[in-house]
Length: 137
Image (cartoon, rainbow, N blue to C red):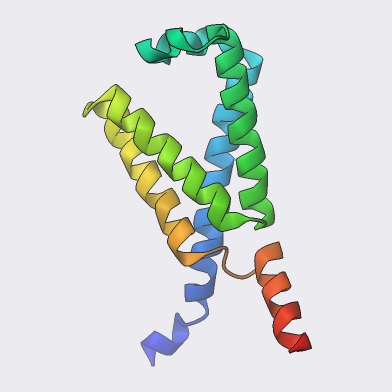
């Protein structure tokens, strides 16, 4: 009886995870756009070989995180957005190392990887497109 009581919650889990992580990425993305110079100190040394300034690099990263977060919120191209964000965070974790920030980013990367593995779940553009394709076949 108890398991039936929580059956409907299983559908909410992927959606809540997707939206919660999207909000985290939105916060970081907008923070980078609003104060890019505050974020340049977090850049790894290899960024110096990239032919753009550190500030522009932070701005591009901020836009990447915002666009990917919006895709997660909409549930559009969810697996692609989640995979790119997870790989991005694993790279950050590797660069930062195993300290408090690196462990936090590792946890976020794993959670984002779960979104890639599970897909968007209900309440998403991806799911509605899949349902439309199923209805026409």
